[in-house]
Image 1 (cartoon, rainbow, N blue to C red):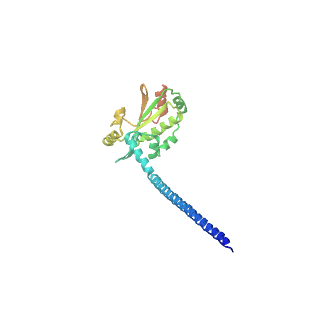
Image 2 (image 1 turned 135 degrees about the vertical axis):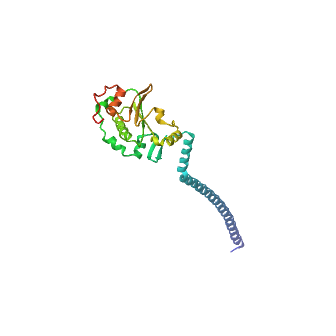
Image 3 (image 1 turned 60 degrees about the vertical axis):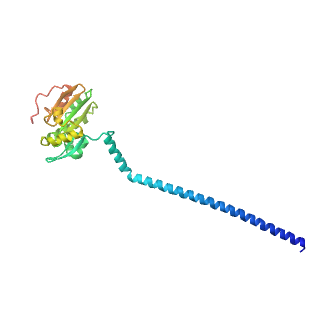
Amino acid sequence: MSISGYSRLLANVLAFLLAACLLGAGEAESFGWMADSAGVAAANFTAVAVADSAAVGAADRTAATGVDSIAIAGMESNKAGTTEAPRHLWFESEQGPLWLGEVTRQDILNRFPEWQQEYDAYQPDPEQIAELRTVAVPVTVLCVLGTWCSDSRREVPRFWKLLDLARNTHLSLQMLAVARRADAQAEHELLAGLGFADDLRDDHGVELVPTFIFLTESGELGRIVESPEYSLEHDAAAILCGLVPSPAPPSWR
């Protein structure tokens, strides 16, 4: 090979080596940039993962305590007066447990399911029920009762049935439960704590329970005290509709 041939070969080798070096540096730089990018991405991923983990942990803590928090908030709302608290309580009297304050049918049945038997067994007079359907003005029947009282256990479920059969939206029932006379002192203190007058009987002029007081905007229409004169539906219809009383009371009276 001539000198010129060696020169060309040497030039090519040098050019190749230079290109290889330049390419290697570029690749190294590229690889370094990619590594740095990968490192940044990995760091970002790690940060996101940590943040997500913290968020999940917070969510888990919220989920774990959410019910209690809601309950506490609810209790605080009750304290603040934004949510109306029940105006009744279960009183463990020495003579037996009883409800005190304003109660619903479901409150009574929850504790005294046997009252439903009287409701189911009672068959009121359909003619008197028809009269109750004719009432065209709002009437509130305030019933002062004792869940310990046999007369209340008999008459109150019967009155529920009258209202259910009459299906008259003008007739509504409010029930106030009182204690035995022997528990008067404790009753007064407990009722005062519920926001009532300390004696519901005196407040409504009630001597015997149950007493059904029929009220309109203009005042009291009448009342049924302890047990009806003829029948519960007849007496109620007579008060509300002016029916003529039956000629004679039932023989069992």
